[in-house]
Length: 115
Image (tube, helix red, strand yellow):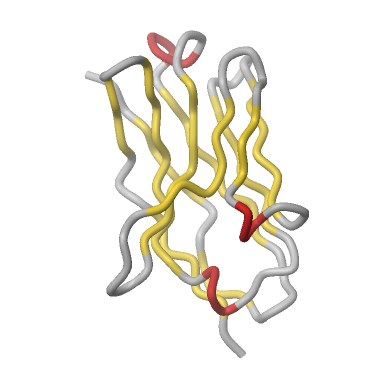
């Protein structure tokens, strides 16, 4: 019923940039906090960035100053602009929508940073 669809992943060299997009169902977008999580091989899934419906933003320390999360309410879409990418940013990136105990997840998009 609720869908989150990510796009924009790919292969990029260290120091490069990518922009991820997540298109969300209109029924949840206005009320839910939206976030980006990532999971690298052998590691736990971790929060990368999160933005509430009131535009309160949190970033993981490892991405502060390099990544920017934003939302376009007219398009029901959340973005993650990733600059100065490092090999340790390599992971599957997942879009998340959250309200209280209710969580929805996208299918994930692969980001690979390698020379």
